[in-house]
Image 1 (cartoon, rainbow, N blue to C red):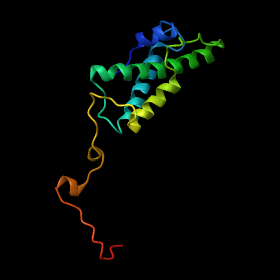
Image 2: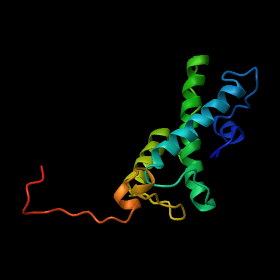
Image 3: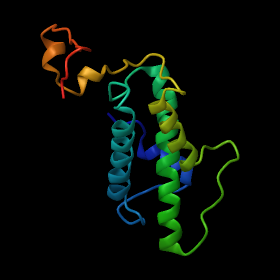
Image 4: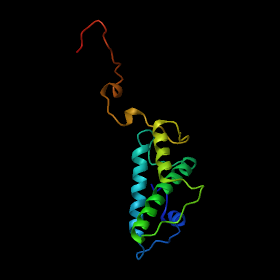
Length: 143
């Protein structure tokens, strides 16, 4: 699922991308996909991805746009040799956006309406799947 669009980041970097721009529209599409995959890989440890709840998507979209915008500004600065136009003081930096992803994974920033993953979603456990209770004998040498 796409968390943000080329149109949204075009507004953020104040450039309309096409086949003749640097980066091209196709390259921007690839960067958008990479950002979405990074977000899913990071928060997928704690939550079911892709995030689809409209309320939680507001935060995830903001994070995605910040990461992509920072990356595009860096690319455009290298290509043109000109320092990219400054961002709004209200804009989220890519670094802050990644810190927010860390907070989501740590559980200090919560996606209220997205299903939390159970550790058994990621690791197959024979005992769990077959309702077998584990036992630990304290009086026996087990190792």
